[in-house]
Image 1 (cartoon, rainbow over the protein chains, first blue to last red):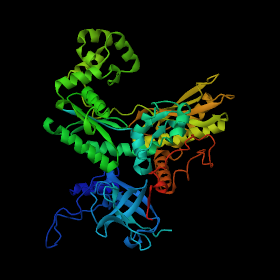
Image 2: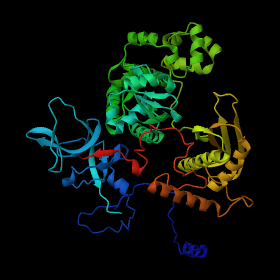
Image 3: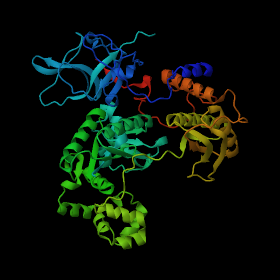
Image 4: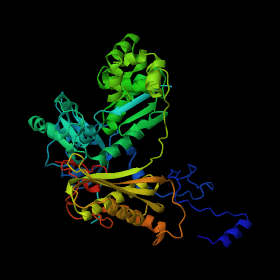
Length: 155
Length: 424
């Protein structure tokens, strides 16, 4: 904090000191105010700074996103390890090739949505597991689409 | 203006099913706190004859016979899903009044001709994003929106959507005739009985009744409702719900409690929960009331209350605990088997007053705020039961703790209780 005397001095030469308001509303700011194709910084940008909010960065649809914990090793090939944290977005439309959480036999299971022998199937990411064919007429309930996996090295 | 009433079907049961797909299609009942009565029933459980509010012991046999899944209520889960539901609904409308944990009035943002497809889209969105089934009633007044929602629920219309403007007059008359007056919004059992005794049996009867006679005999509230049934809007959308007047934290004990120290321990937990709520709502409490009572269904019912005015509005645990402890000593009477304890924070204010020269302050408000923040962070990080204040009762298995043997995990509020996705 600057002392009042210094503030007064600055005020006399026409300078006002602004302090960040810790109670201010949390509003997203542009990372840069202008975009210049050549990449020259514009003087107008003048150091627009904000802290990075990981939650915001990872969740495109926060109200439709859920955190799940992984149990098992059938998805190792995709970098999904036992105990990892999954971020699942239910607002995303599931398409072939995506990794999804599906409701199968009353539990939530993680697999890749794909084809096996020309038939739609849930594919594991580990040779020790077999693909699960989705039979004609069998309704597969896709619970949500996996958009991130968080693997932690912290003890 | 066209209004919609959206509410979730069997809300608590639907919340439980989100993370437990095995409950899909099975009869499920959620019990009230302390596992007393049915507060939510899946359609399958309704079909088996479990009635709303029925105490568990009355249908325990039925439950075992039919394999009804019985769950304790998990309000942390329902609260979070409710908040998400309300935000998603609000995004799809031009105005919103949150009416209860699972009901919201919305101002429809599209022309009447498009109301049906708007409502269908809304339902699909909520179903996909939160896994919750909802019903939508759309009408020119709140009361009619409620009626339409009720009809959608009763499956008079397809797809859980009922639009007043799309029903032909003949159909409206018929359904009005078939809707008992007691099913209407705000008509309780007693009022319904009185109306029926005077020949007003159905929604149709009420709409047709002479309005002057109705106002004379039943007052202005019912007269307004009648106007609304006739399609004349009298109730506006209350976009800003009035600030909460009080915060209550109370719980039944899992067993009868007689010791003062156990009562104090429970009150300490309620005080901490109350402070959390004050922080959530950016409020300070001016007064606190303590309540302890025995079971009202037993001989020798005793209920003790005492209240304390705080030296100044506060949410500092030390200040509040001082007040709660002294009030508890006053409310407590030895020789009673207590069944419930609680605190009520009232005289709530949106800001703390500047320090009082004579108030008990060791380190001041600011330090208390920082302490509360640090405690919150520690609990968030290591779990709720690792660190608490004073006589917070972190003892393993508090033996007075609420009976909730069948509660689902804190799926959305605890890092250690996340739902599991199997990779096998």
